[in-house]
Image 1 (cartoon, rainbow, N blue to C red):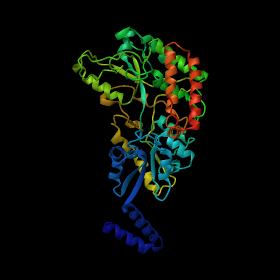
Image 2 (cartoon, rainbow, N blue to C red; image 1 turned 90 degrees about the vertical axis):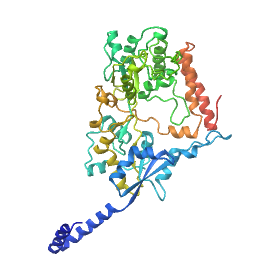
Image 3 (cartoon, rainbow, N blue to C red; image 1 turned 135 degrees about the vertical axis):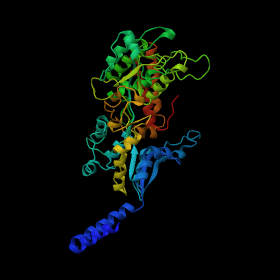
Image 4 (cartoon, helix red, strand yellow; image 1 turned 30 degrees about the vertical axis):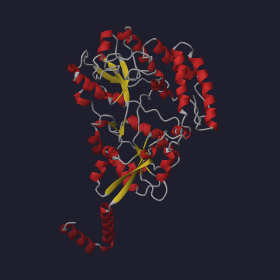
Length: 483
């Protein structure tokens, strides 16, 4: 400290010794704390020897501004342990990420901060393994007014309206549409907050042409090929429908809700409003790389498509290089919020909160843990990372359209994320490695609907019966296999 400062301190001691001594002790303790070199242990679900990407994304800036704190990244599961998985004669157990995480959160040297997804954080909240952040936020007057409301509400949904984690970034999707196609067809383009039925009706009006000239009105994916069986999950997710119950003991697909989903999507596919999955894929006759090949939206094969935030980069790049590509015309596009169901008008799209940061209830260094989370969710950090290509920062003031363009950027963050329906799902898949085959079996029956061999009700009933047989076999032998 400077001499002038110490001079004033000495005068204060002479004047009021009884009061000054505690102040001196406090100053010394504070300075000691600030200068003390400390390690902050941050847990991730997966990781390996090279943690440079995680550090670049999240912790490098913090270490630069907090030189007395060193970040140690601790993966719950070391990816190196997966080498050779599946090549042995005897099937290996898939690592249980939740159990592995709990191990590094307890014991003699527990981690301080956990970075994980919504399902993991919700499980930790339910088991009282992470600290509630509301008291810390109130004490430090941490401002949440600029955090994207749908992100904050999604976080609150995990903890019964209390906050147990914060996320500096999130990923999302929106409905992209071709403005030129709508104008040419004389049809009003989509708007925010439309229902799925509204969008499907618009898609039906925009569907036209035959063979190579056919244009789909809508697609769940930007990429050509593949059955709508998997992509239609975007339609069913916000209804929170399950394939089987929370214990994976009984199928739940034989229901009116599932029948409506299958009836709706199969009819759209049969009417060629959406891709059926068996259409011949375009090939570049020259044999050279063509960035448009397989992209339904850029190649003008669909009027509307669900795309994630990073898809904007492809649209910008394609339009910038339009003169270099044969038979390509710039796409005039915009985005609106993903469609919603009337039963859940505020929930839709694919908003992922995969980088939630929480404090371990057993943290050795809870003060620094909060300092990290506070910094990662600050305006300063958002300003640094606002130009990310793949995710958006959670502070809405720093979410701006790219490249000086003017499009409806709010469409990516207006709706709330779908809350996790079963936090034990990952654990069940780890316990029963072939449980995925029960899900896959559904595609076989859905395709029979697309081939007009069965009605949706018949197909779902048969899937339920077959699935129950498979679940019963897995219950007796968790590593059972199926032909």
